[in-house]
Image (tube, rainbow, N blue to C red; front, side, top):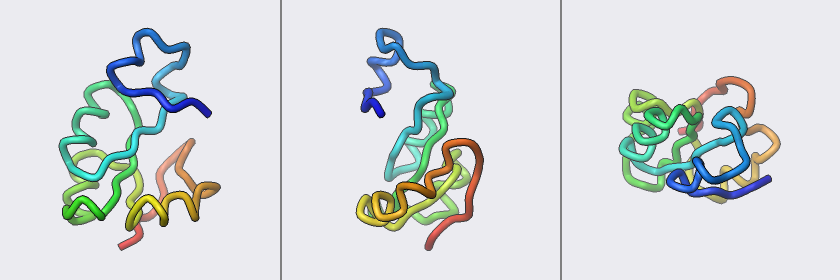
Length: 84
């Protein structure tokens, strides 16, 4: 696994379909969608799961601890249900 900032993608040796963006605002999700990246949302940013989904998140987690606890369930090849 590589951790890459969106602005570094043009120089990175990864294709957009190999990237999973993580954000806690709809703005993070919207930027990822514009970069053709899948994104998951974190509720700890104060936004609702509905707002994050509407912005393009394919999955929602309570916070980073929830995401990492369920790392093997990350939607790397599809969409899974939100956790709220």
